Amino acid sequence: MRGVYLLICLQLLLGFPILQVQVFADSNTVLNDFKIVAKYKPGYSDWKPWKVTITGDGNVIQETYVFDDKDEKTTLKSYSLSRDDLKEIITEIKESNFMSLSKKFDYKVTDNPTLILTVTIERKTHQVIVYAPSHSKQNNEVKRFLDVWNKVLKKVPPPNPEQKQID
Image (cartoon, rainbow, N blue to C red):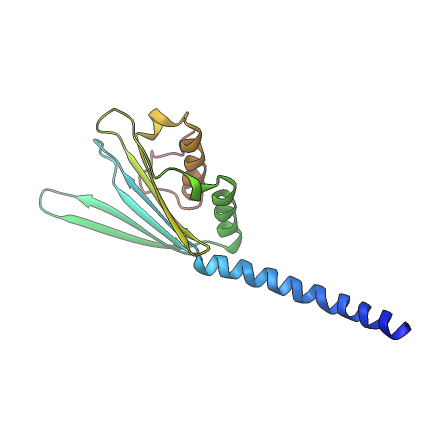
């Protein structure tokens, strides 16, 4: 009987570290699979359009597009986010239930900005487009979208100095 008791205790002692490693491995899988692309299209404005790509390894590429009379020029900047920064973004995506949001939100105005988020997580990809976000920010789903959008802007400031998070 004592041997069975020791065997059970040994399994419990060895089982907990194994469970912790599995949870950590699952977390890494999510991070390796994770990608978010945020695109900003300014509408009728002198602000620059841009795109930010954040990958699960923390690498960030920010593309800023500048148009002159003849050409489009792209400026690239690279950043690195910490594991904690990535976890904050992923937590916001999950808390907002981003993957269940409608794909498109419109408002009947012209020449307004368009915000686009494309999220890949846990082998699923979901894109949401919000046109004229300041007009539709009272919509519950748009609020949830903006929670994620604002988290991205907090971690990777936009290239337009006046551009702020949308409340």
